[in-house]
Length: 69
Image 1 (cartoon, one colour):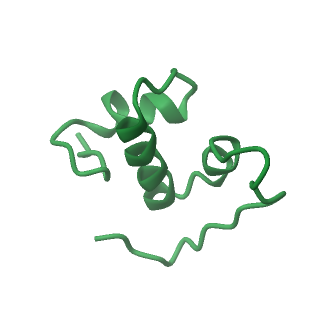
Image 2 (image 1 turned 90 degrees about the vertical axis):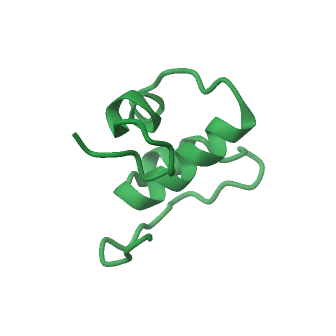
C-alpha cells in the first residue's frame, strides 16, 4: 500500500489516484491535492487536463528526477 503523496493518510489509489483515473473531484482542496499528487507521480496529462483551458499550456513536462518531499 502506497500512501498518497498529497499528505492524507490514505492509499494513493483510494485518494488522488481515483481522480487521476477520471473520478470527479468534489472540492477545491481535493483538486489542489490531486494536482500536487500528479506532479509527484509524474502524471503530466492529468495536470494538463485539470488546468484552466484559458491558461493551460499545450504541453506539460514533468521531470522524473524531481523528488517531492
